[in-house]
Length: 437
Image (tube, rainbow, N blue to C red; front, side, top):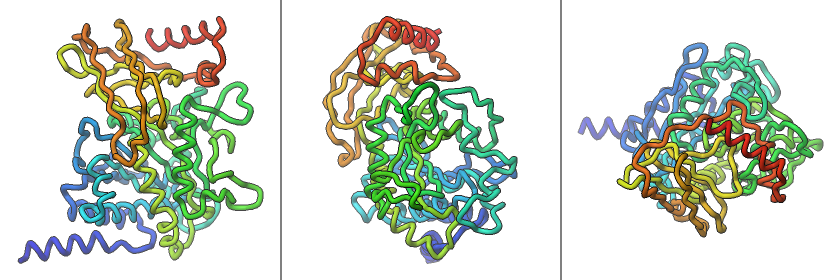
């Protein structure tokens, strides 16, 4: 009887999430109560500490919350990177509440969590949040971390050497990205109402748009969020000066940004990330939080489902053992840091429905090419499966170096569908030499 009462108490604590702002101690207590109430569905850990020593908490949800399982993609939401942009912090707590209470009752949420490992970080900048004493719709010093650094200008940049002094919060996220096989992500901000996508920066002529090799996928991802949001898709923005058709924008088209987290995820983390601006007011009154949750609830779920787009599989040798660091790319979509298999030989490529040639390469051996017809797989909660086996290989691939400053403009010809000239071929050979040196 005592045990049953104890469990009921834990569940009631986990369910009693008010629409208010939760400071560090309350946020930690809530996450711990959820994990205690749902120990087999959740895993709570800190990926590091802030400048002032606060834990950077991540709650993981899924059928196998404690570790990666072959074939199950990793997804993440990160909020409150700017400490005074607070809506994302709170709606992620309500997302956690919705997921754990729906699991086993709602068939869609149950399938989603059975086939996806979802990582939720409610705050990347807890010091900045605590430093924001007076909530305001506009800029405050709480935007920055304790060292006065803007964390969304603090990552290594994909186009130029920004020589940033990497902050503890940034370093923790970089290590987190390195240690997980993240496939899809979103970064929750405030101060506008739009879904923004890679690239944020550019070198050379761009004509106002910085296009990635996977531009079609990014547009789809941004629209998935905006069209499932209560009003983002209308594109009206926050004032008459700022309109975003269909509620989306290329990051660079909006404004140039150096050292941002979404470009870092895509280039070095093999993870597609978009930036979600969720509120015109950065730190709105608490009585508006329930409406923000209602406006974003469907979009948050539909966006997670997109982690199952495209194709996935394993690359193995003649003995059936996994080959780590094998390159697996879709032809015509060259990443300057080629996308590689993880330690289990797995790859995940987000691609829209269509016909693609997938190229698997182990340096020193002949590439394997397979033509795949990719259906819309999000409703199945599993990307198309396509494995590769290298019959001559019985050694593990060594990691090839990746340029510290990938110069994507050198590969623009490949995604712009123009015929390669001798100059282009020489440029590509130079880039590949850098990668494989």
